[in-house]
Image (spheres, rainbow, N blue to C red):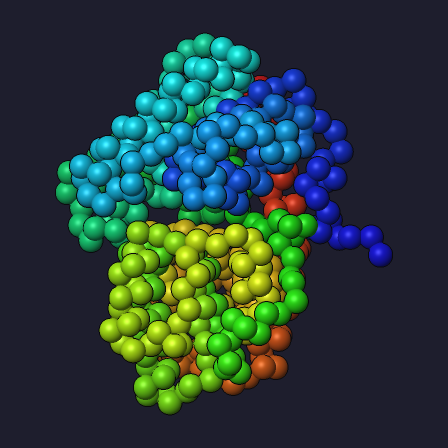
Length: 413
């Protein structure tokens, strides 16, 4: 049987090469490539469309090589200070990143002139790297991954000077960009209303999973720690991800529901990992919660294939309400139902594949998890609904056309 369009590799879905002869420079600061799955899918798509693609990004665990070529894509990596934890830390991190990005951009440009700088936030500073090359004829495409003023507020629980600075830098980024790429309709509205961009220059390219690469593997029962059921989490271990609320929910499941048959496996790394592990130990929940840390795909796929359902405990706040979370798409790609708090974009993405708990309420989150664990027939129906949604609407194959439309517009101004 021939594979469905979504299950074909990216290269096979582009009939011609509309970007032949073009050179694209992608700049990413917060994650190394190819670990950043969304950016890597974009890069592979641009390469399949005929473009030469160069990437500037930081080094990271497992991605220490300063230069690497993968699938014909040149990846230039640079060191960064430890992840920022305060105002001075952000100044050090962003300053170092800008210095390396500018230095490497000029090195790449001297080797081969690029036609487009594709800047992926956070932070909203990459326009500073793009400016001199814009004067030399390069186009700047802003790939809007995070709404930074809301991200700052979610992390630090306040506004103030740095929040105002984020708003100003966001505005300058939009004003500098020839074209903007939004990950969802909420971000598109921000680009138009807060960023002042022409609506015709904002293209929605969702972070849909590439089903040619995200494929189930045989279940690995050892992840269940001898228990009958398993709940999985995939994502960053940060302050705004609500893992503390999930830990509270697990405590409620064990202590109040008296359920000792459910294992929780949390995949991912981040600045709060150590603190969260301490919290689990303090609650005497270590036997029920497994942290893998940042994990390779084989671990990720094993967990996703083994778990009965996924959980998205992101706190309900302006940042998470308007953002599309990769974990939601990945659960759906593996036909897994999920439980999450009620947020606008989370509901749009997951639809009928999710149950929705009361905002930031770990007791209701716990109740919804137990409800779904105890109803395997509903789990199966919800999982199939999620897979159908990514296959027919949200998967990466459906994002290729709007991505190439954004490039066509920028290059033909």
